[in-house]
Image (cartoon, rainbow, N blue to C red; front, side):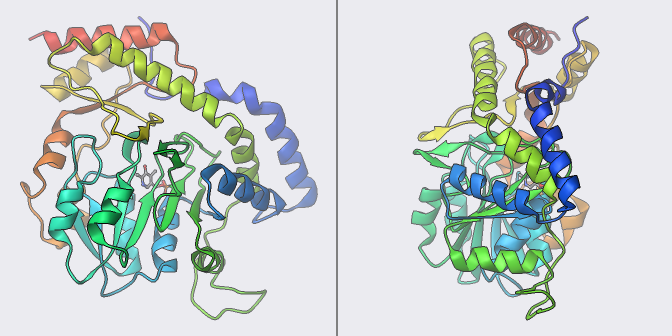
Length: 368
Ligand SMILES: *Cc1c(COP(=O)(O)O)cnc(C)c1O
């Protein structure tokens, strides 16, 4: 029986092993472990890649979202709108700023619904976070048109490294972007790391202060900050991998296209769509099926590592019960959470593996 894991990071390693070893040796020789020259080097590469003037390396993606919000002046008394169907980190980052969390439903592409955002906007709404879920950008320019120019528009670009919308990279579309370099992301470190991207020098400088204890210079601390700095070793990994990101994203897209080809005639399966203007980087290939748990069990029994991203929307977690929402408030997000499956997808996945997964899925949804 073939074994196809949900992700296999090991297939990327051989392409970058030498460069990483040399880079690590340099960091060790220089003892430049935190915010060293390697971090500055990566920040510059990443800013250029995203098409922004400022990229600030931080400790992880959740901190990146929180720091982006705080640097844009969001805090207690402000309402921040996010989609109900996201990883809980988006919600947690908002809560930690002291702002009030407000949820919106999603559209058919699993992206925040512009209509629902417009319905929920109040004079207290100070920020909206578009989550570029599964690898395609949320409709940031439509959100902007719908909410006006005074509201801070944040991109959660953790799942969308390299994605484009009307030619512009994820992370350069809103007021400020935040991303995660968790190992499993399209651009992943060898541990935790993240970044904030923006064209605003003011926001960029605020994040630089906040990530390092609110300092402006050594032992000068005008504000209370965090310890959320990027490690130089992670920056070495990220710079080496960034050179291959487009190639790896193209491999993901080819595998995704093949899944779509192989499964498009199966009536029971809802395949992912690409929204107009989007270049999708397929962090995840997510389909919807009837009797989902049963189908996942059959995939697993055939050696296939299917995933569910995510089994519950934000308001269904106990941590967020205090928001006062209940089951039924976000019908699409709730329905999708019951039906979604993430199929194996990673750079280096073979077309035989894709075929095996597609054949097994086809059989699983047709059997009763
Ligand atoms: C991974 C992820 C995060 C959090 O990133 P960490 O680096 O794990 O803190 C936030 N939002 C989304 C959508 C993610 O996928």
